Image 1 (cartoon, rainbow, N blue to C red):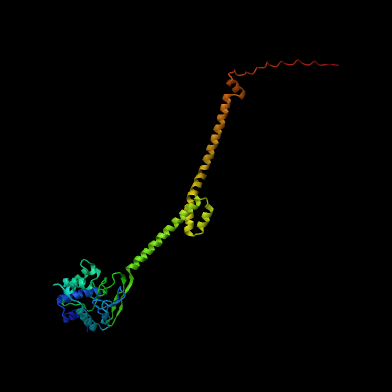
Image 2 (tube, rainbow, N blue to C red):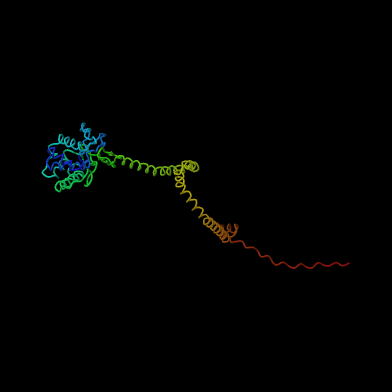
Length: 322
């Protein structure tokens, strides 16, 4: 027996489902497994989910026997299993789209299977696809081929065992018409979030460590332990050496400025000393000697030096002759 979408539809009609109900059920089966009766994957709760509608073994303990590797028999068994467990609002509706939406909302019951959810809209759209197959008679030849929206999982958790909504990357399932290979979640979204969070923490610590070392270096230098601080920081490796350079940068800049300004300061000091000496000399010349200053304070006229008369020429000494 073949194992394509048409065989699933025929099995549903044979089991007593109406045409719109069969189309709505298949629209959800596309989202759940790509209508692959041999799909068996581990769901987010750790239990296997089996078959076209991914019956989860936690909710349906007997579902483990629905996937045997004989796809024709498995389609019949899975349609019968669905018939035994679905009723009421899940099959309500006068159009395939309405049934597909109610099937998703009341039977699958995943978070995104509710009206307005992404998976809900996908399943309703799938109903139009299946209705086209029914009306045209042009069916895909095998499960998961020839139509869009097929997947080994719906990307959301439901009571019937749809795939894990927390899964960021799931392995696909390969239908070998004997058994299925693959399935399962490679990495969950929470794991990715944890990895990103851990990377951000490491990045933040990487930024914080140099900042703390710089603060420590400034504190050491402010306390006067420059040499000890430099030796301690250099011993801490690249971060420590970087912190030491940052902390010592103000000191180096200050020393460079002082060195550059030293010649100008020396020249200014020399000029100031020369001006002071020149001023003192001018003051002394203007004030005169200390004796003159005392006579001026006492109100006495300055003493004038007597002008000595010019020296008279000495008379020549007599020359004695013998």
